[in-house]
Amino acid sequence: MTFETPQIKINPMNKILVTGAAGQLGTELTQKLCEIHGPEAVIASDINQNSSEKFSFCQFMMLDVLDKDSLRKVIANENISQVYHLAAILSATAEQKPLLAWKLNIDSLLILLELAKELKLEKVFWPSSIAVFGKESPKENTPQDAVQTAGTVYGISKMAGERWCEYYYSHHKVDVRSLRFPGLIGYKARPGGGTTDYAVDIFHKALTGQVFRSYLEKDTRLPMMYMPDAIKATLDLMQAPKENITVRSSYNLTAMSFTPEEIFLELKKHFPDFKIDYTPDYRQEIASNWPKSIDDQQARNDWNWHQEYDLHTMTTDIIKNLPSWID
Ligand code: AKB
Image (cartoon, rainbow, N blue to C red; front, side, top):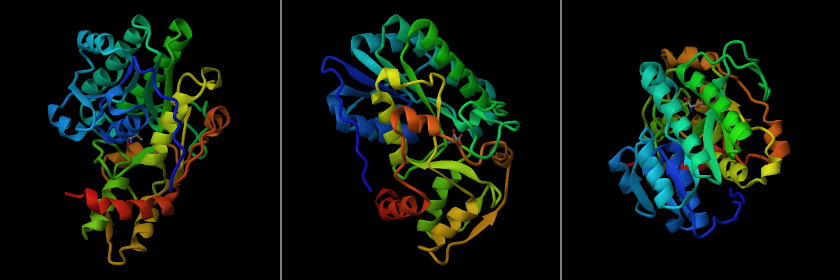
């Protein structure tokens, strides 16, 4: 399946910086940004030097997003006009390392928003998450403005981050744009530390003939999205005219919702011997307090968001492509 990628190129004098580029979203987003704007216009950065191997197609630099002076130098010296700030610790890992997660997720955002104000960045993208919602939030078709009672460190950091984004937009005119991502499923990079990551691992187990041990109960329904749709949503939002962006905290976004049992049964159509067992752990409680489905009408109205993939088409596409990525 294909989607139309917006083609407005960045000014040739400027560059785009991606932080946390070696992560699940960053790996694919950086590739797409290079296709659109040209490899010379994109700098991939990550804290891990080993990640440089992934980015032979564009400039890579090691960058600690908590080091404000280094970040300022890169933005100024490289004429960066747009930053996709993806460096973060996800929900499951954040519960193990709460203070580090808070520091990385919030301090780095504040550093970047301050630099965006000081150096007059044209645009900033920052991902939020369905994790902003909690026990007291409605579970079905969770509305854009539903009460947010995040019960995880990650969710609290995303809630606070959303408030900061709105604050820097309204007080300092920083053009920061954000999406509340559901679980993201891709095959080009393994995710790390998320609660929804089971939906990536299950493909690896099915394709390598192993039993899948699910850490969530069979009927735990969560909102999800295939990576090409997440990339499309990010680029569509960033290319949308400023006046169309009516939400400056973060947009609700979704593509599908399913349970571990439903994705297992979808995979079983392709791998009849595939087996699953259920051994829920601490991630069950995180997932139980998240929405089951999301109302993303605002994104659809404001910048014409629509997804391409559902569970069936995503599964077929991953099964076709994943074997060539398994090492
Ligand atoms: C996680 O599971 O932590 C992330 C998310 C839903 O933001 N994938």
